[in-house]
View 1 (cartoon, one colour):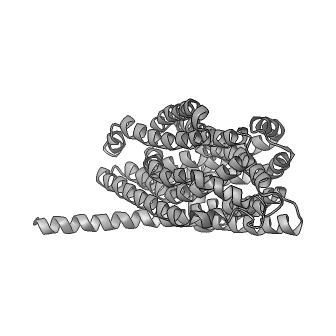
View 2 (tube, one colour; view 1 turned 90 degrees about the vertical axis):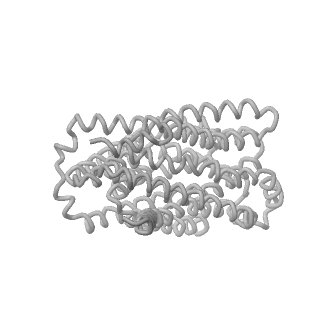
View 3 (cartoon, rainbow, N blue to C red; view 1 turned 180 degrees about the vertical axis):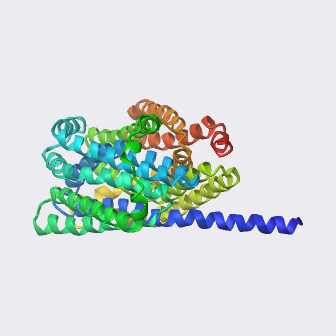
Length: 455
């Protein structure tokens, strides 16, 4: 074959791979970006109701508590996605239906358990996060959304494994539009404050679950007929399912510890402006993280598919392309932050309030960290998707344990000298260390490629 033919085939394969990545990534970006947008709207609504700093601070603590709960349950999505994608790639559609049954069962058990244990969980969380009465009211209202939220994790993980990003996108848009509309109605129409935002979450999550189940029935009717409940609870494959999920639980617990500690440490600094500003800047950062999650989900779905199909060549192309898209997203976000961070920040604050000028001044001291973090976080975010798709969760777990230990060590070493900057420094280096460890613990990703090589 002539050299120009080789070049043509190579370029065509690159175009095809980009198309596959974007087919999954774009709907996931749309659905993912609605999450921080909902957080931004919620924070903005809280900031325009009552005292900006106090209300935003209380909402930040309440949201952190539920992040702790939800993120620790996210193993349902990630474990389901990886195994389902591998079964899909291998053409084993019977196994994909078994994974759906397992995801639904585990999600249901978790949701019921949290409702039953809501009082001890709530009191412990309020104590740990130094929450006040406003936070308590928020918690005991929003906890009724948790079962629906966890069920959506399981269903969305299965849809991603089945290479379907459209249904999660439709569900996410529904959830977030409903949440914003009901938040405005409850907060300003009934003067409910952040409790109104909590009840809006309840309405939104159950609405999203209803839409997701209806779309599942409409789009996967034939698949649902193949479900065998006895096979779904066969102990041998269940053991591997829970081994992978145990690693993801530990990894997710570390992530939650980092983010929750970030908010808790901000609160313990004793400055309401610092707490409010850190919460708002973290919301700005999440715009990037959720945009990049679209490519992480693409890496997750396609890695699992190519591992299941034993297609090492396509897996190499997939990883390289996803990494390129991830860095491109990082640079776009940095450009947005540099040009418009003040405009974005002021969306959170009532500009007529007495503390708006002081909050903007404090934010100006720390916005540089938010501009640096996207580059630090690009590699670990994308590699998370690769590791989930390959079900190489031990590397995720071990790298996360070490980088989390480094996070706390860096903060406590530098906090006596630079205060709040130490918190942002620790968070930035935590991202860098996490990506470096994942890369080298997988022997520069060769262990991932070997999964698609084995017979």
